[in-house]
Image (cartoon, rainbow, N blue to C red; front, side):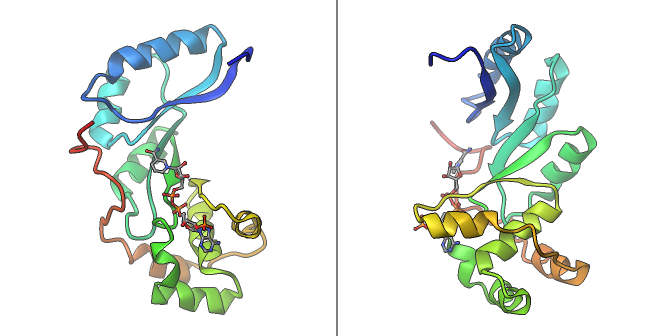
Length: 176
Ligand SMILES: NC(=O)c1ccc[n+]([C@@H]2O[C@H](COP(=O)([O-])OP(=O)(O)OC[C@H]3O[C@@H](n4cnc5c(N)ncnc54)[C@H](OP(=O)(O)O)[C@@H]3O)[C@@H](O)[C@H]2O)c1
């Protein structure tokens, strides 16, 4: 990579429980200063507990599918207790939530786009984001979420959309 160090390195998927060896290797690279922060992706609470039973370094973050239809409350609670940041992938549910009536209604109320409403909901829950667009204007607008605040009633409206619905694979059953 021709770099002195990497800022952040994640284990992307679990790989049939073969992640212990990977994590210990990442810890060595972290201790050597080659990686400044190490984390995981697609880990459920039971995977985090198992990892933490032998880890010397707690993952700095867990990148998981998370959006209003999949609020991931169990991982959210556990991560909050253990100071593990959550980073949401597919935060717009691959665009599928942008026409949801509750989100469209809130977009009108706050004079923001449906995407900005969803991303602001994440921000107010202290969730980091990986949101994708190939359009520069959408990238700009998706990053422009710091000048408004969703009130608690509207946060609750979004919280109530949770159905445990995934757009991507389930980490407990995903077969490589
Ligand atoms: N760790 C993992 O296992 C994992 C798994 C899946 C994905 N990811 C990461 O998560 C990132 C995002 O996930 P994703 O691409 O699946 O879903 P997403 O970010 O929820 O949604 C992307 C879709 O929303 C559209 N979009 C974005 N902003 C918009 C806006 N302001 N208005 C209207 N449409 C908008 C995009 O279209 P346009 O591009 O046409 O604007 C695209 O079709 C990926 O790029 C990937 O890096 C990680």
